[in-house]
Image 1: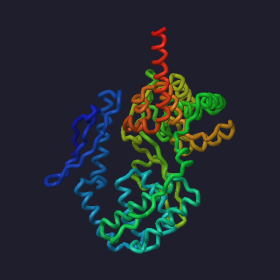
Image 2: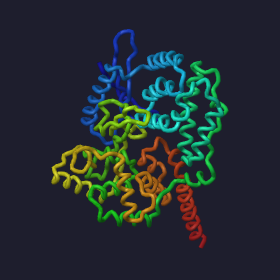
Image 3: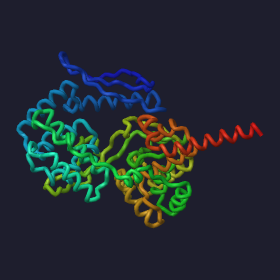
Image 4: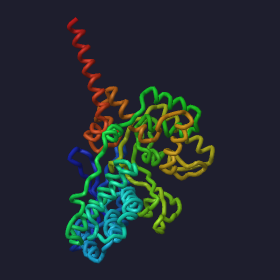
Length: 422
């Protein structure tokens, strides 16, 4: 049976601890559900019952394990690894199953893609004990010469490091060749390019002018991203019940993601997009799936009244077209939510038509934050609106914008002092 009790985090955030008892002699299983801001007591209790029921179902299906059970499972997998010899066998038999348990679906799919595209073709059929530091350096150097991005080369390095460290720690190999492998270093030009890219106010005005003749759905979607700094997937996951038109607020409670090789639960999949075969002959199934925001917590933010009016107009348009959906942004002529990749493709076409350089959803997120901070907005407030885990993340990403804000503040101070002296 599931039970719950209300608790508070160290920083005063209320949440419910949901427990499922498994009988005498077995430890209980638990999870947390954070209470969204602004919810009524009735709404909280209704959602809490759903969360309890879903967690209890997952426990009964064996999807949830205690820390001791996870450790035991890892030990069993380590024992299996003793019979595994090639890099591909270890990756598919030990490394990726562990990733499926310990990471989000999008992260698991990312590592799988790195293995399939870069690591397996070069080293997949080699015996793990025979792979040398020279082999690993040769792979990384080849990728750099092929002009793969610094982030991609770094991700391949990290994946190899995790694989060989795991194999070494379980005594499958007697030395770790990654200990002396050369980590890809970013060139000065790459470091310059990695600065946060954002549009100027004038460029934002040009984008807004271009939107005036665009379909209502895309006008509302792009305006929402500019006004709030929402992530692409958060906007795609937005539901009508999370819009408070009266108070011009929306609650960001979910995130939609796409995986061409979906390995998550059936309950999380909103819809499937078909199957395909990889170069290695493996059949994969694509899916759009619903998950929590990146921070793991919901947040409520303010939006401009003009955005609310656009969303209200969009709902009326959907009703006239016979589209009844819980999602705000749907596919054309369908109640299904749009695929998270659709906004990126649309913005690329928009950019080409209107001569906008490098338009994509995440650049609009950077634009919102950079302009707001450079013009004196409170860092903590911007951090909360962006859904960052803490203010330090915001400061690290938007150092330049914060420096501009500090310069303006210092100039205002000097001007004030100068007036006093005069």
